[in-house]
Image (tube, rainbow, N blue to C red; front, side, top):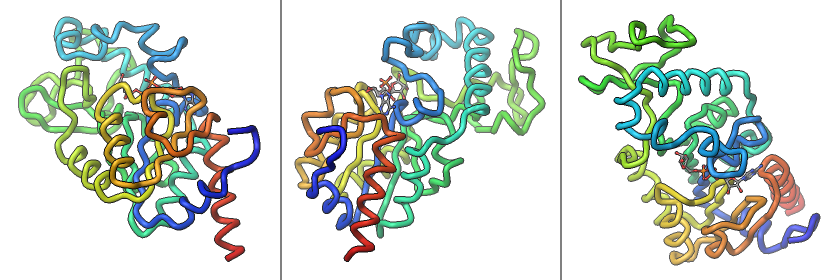
Length: 257
Ligand code: APR
């Protein structure tokens, strides 16, 4: 798609949709300054995912893994939602039925105002007790910026060791989140795929099923990927530029009606 024109069919499909499913990945937070995972400068080129994103890696070195998540928390705290996040939050108000399903563990969607959201991969701010499974927000406790063996976070309820409440490789996505996502995928008439390589957690299946069900599928990503083949429209631009531009065309079209 050229640098300016947006297909009329794309705008019309977005204007007339009634049930919208938005699926986001790390690319949605890239323009907020947070790294993606699989790009050249991504997290998995700097930190071995087997060490930092598996249960085995955590158990063999909880201090090292926790301190990477404490660093990520500081990065997230100093980041701001970008226009991709704020536009998606605006869309939520417009459509009769809407669900945002994010793979991101930052809270930028929430800080931009998104409320109808499921988080497939957990939340970087949360910790979960390995023994009793209770989940806590790390910001409710006076935790050190850097943990040592002695100061690793323990469960306020049972004293068990707490881990980051993140879904790591080889672990299951929370059932409720996936069930909510699959329900919307089966019913949506518009799916927006924003800033994900589609390499994990169902993205592939979401796009395939939505397309097969007759939904209009739109991908916003500067790079082509495994999901692009399912998109009726691929907007090869950064989400923080493309989404507000598309949304302005949709809402201008509404006003003109
Ligand atoms: N706007 C939109 N998309 C972008 C932008 C941008 N400004 N910049 C990069 N992208 C795209 C890249 O082209 C790539 O397709 O974002 C995608 C990022 O892909 P990944 O790094 O694989 O991140 P993601 O798809 O979110 O990974 C999914 O894998 O490692 C796990 O748990 C981790 O949630 C993560 C999951």
